[in-house]
Image 1 (cartoon, rainbow, N blue to C red):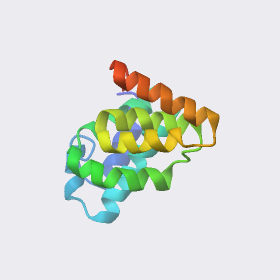
Image 2 (image 1 turned 180 degrees about the horizontal axis):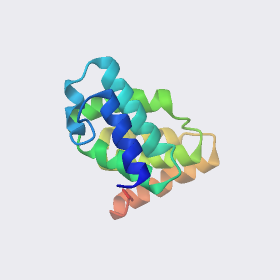
Image 3 (image 1 turned 180 degrees about the vertical axis):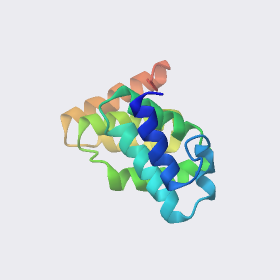
Image 4 (image 1 turned 45 degrees about the vertical axis):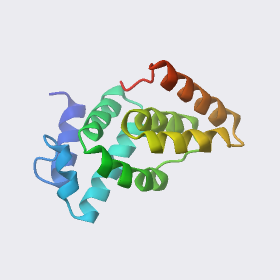
Length: 138
């Protein structure tokens, strides 16, 4: 097991036993625990620079029931991320494009209305990739 996997496992299991193996169990956790888990997963999926961290978080998020995730993910992402930062905006768009069509549409609309030309460009690139079916998930 790589050091990234080991650290990820330890952090997930510190939130709740066996959360590493069963991230879908996040829906059964108390609010404070699921907020902590989602915050960690969003940070790894959207702020990390290492592909292993990004992939581990995205794979865990993909195992969480989509309806529940769509209801809770947006608030955590808004609080955690700087969506004026092109890297974080792009990573969140990739994530939303695979996990929540509604969150994806809202993020694209927000990006298209941005005063930041890099964010506008990222929104267009995300939309183009989504339409072509080439949106990366890693």
